[in-house]
Amino acid sequence: MTVQINTVSFQGIEVVDIEVQVQLSSGLPAFNIVGLPDKAVAESRERVRAALTAIGLALPPKRITVNLAPADLQKEGSHFDLPIAMGILSAMEIMPINELFNYVALGELALDGTIRGVNGVLPTALHAHATDKGIICPVNQGTEAAWVKGLDIIAPQSLLALVNHINGRQILTVPKPVINSNVNERAHLPDLKDVKGQETAKRVLEIAAAGNHHLLFNGPPGSGKSMLASRLPSILPNLEPEEILEVSMIHSLAGLLKNGELKSLRPFRDPHHSASAPAIAGGGSKAKPGEISLAHRGVLFLDELPEFNRNVLESLRQPLETGKISIARAEAHITYPARVQMIAAMNPCRCGEVDPVTQICARGQRCSLQYQARISAPLYDRIDLYLDVPPVRSQDLSLPTPKEGSAEIAARVQAARNVQTRRFSSYPKEIRPHANAEAEGKILEEIAELGNDELNIMQKAADKFQLSARSYHRVLKVSRTIADLEGQDRIQTNHIAEALRYRRNKSR
Image 1 (cartoon, rainbow, N blue to C red):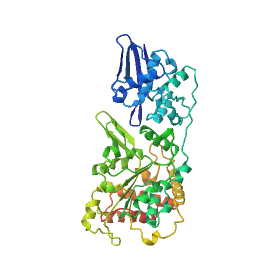
Image 2: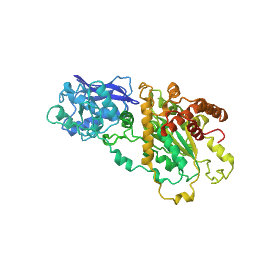
Image 3: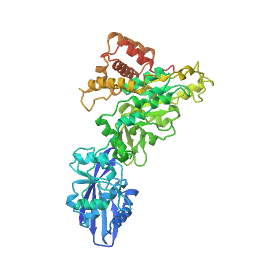
Image 4: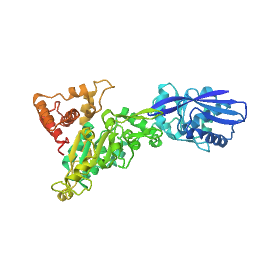
């Protein structure tokens, strides 16, 4: 007898249908799994055997063959345990196969028969709904699948509970979606009121948040660069519903959704500078998402930027431009979304012994030049905002707490983002930018149309500072954001002048 259970495999964020075909045939007792299983899938035999024993059953004394089709696709992960067990139980006529055909199942089995959580429940739920199927998943991830409206969900705690539910001897509770309270989460975010002085740096941080621009702080140790960057999430707008699903699917695949709870605060990832290229860009033997994908629609903070491996930094150039990263391996070619806002911080030189007045390294200019040369010109060119952060004065440290904090700045940022949302709403979804920093080509020409005076300033600046075409366009994007913060319909000369002030030129 042969039965079939539906499950899935993952190629990046893409979900691939897998058929778990189970056959019981005469012959010497054996239990074989075929169809290119990895080590975790092959070990399912022992977990399934122990789980059946825990509920008072034993494998039949027959030849059991489990085929994972299509057979030429590598199968990875422990989520195949549950569909394999369901297939065997159906072949033993303990579970009716007609009740299971319209479900996609995934879950890991413990030796006592309980069903443990696995990665990828949310993208599986979306895929199941798109193919008019339901989903069978672990109980603690039912709330994750419940975000897909109209989806038929069975979320058992154990294999025995699933058998009883399918056979009508028990009714499982239908899970409901859960989301963290943004009020409580935002209350625990670091506030910009903690930062004394550095008013220019706060202004640049506000512009970066309003237009989703990349930002680099350059300054001596102790000037507050990391402190400022860590407070960026407190002024960013919440994720839109569509963005929540985008971010949550990636985090689901990485196993970072706790108890199936989705968050509407933007991700903030701050990897250490010793991180490898696969850790940042993604990859490894299983091509998992890296930090740049886990920060999708959020912030990627790179502290001590020149200390990162050169190859790691160069791997960021393409995703910073395109908003996605492709991982090529011999067995697969996988693409992950990577639309991030990069915030970086660095010292002027490696030794950090900078004169507080002249801002010159005590060991000479060579130390600074060699250190800053560790970042390539193409990467510098992709950074919209650059600011030399001066040391904090002792007088500033004794000042009272600033009246304006993250809440006031966040309100201005949200107002500017609302302007951008209305502006871009008329464009097709496929090319619609979420913020000014994402505008390209014809869209940028339309939103950043310049008058004669503004055009004259831009042309003179391009000649004087030897701006590349990319730099020229990024100045326009920042100018558009500054105009949005001031509620202006058109870019004016003062907006361009301020944007040029925050552009790194070759003399620095």
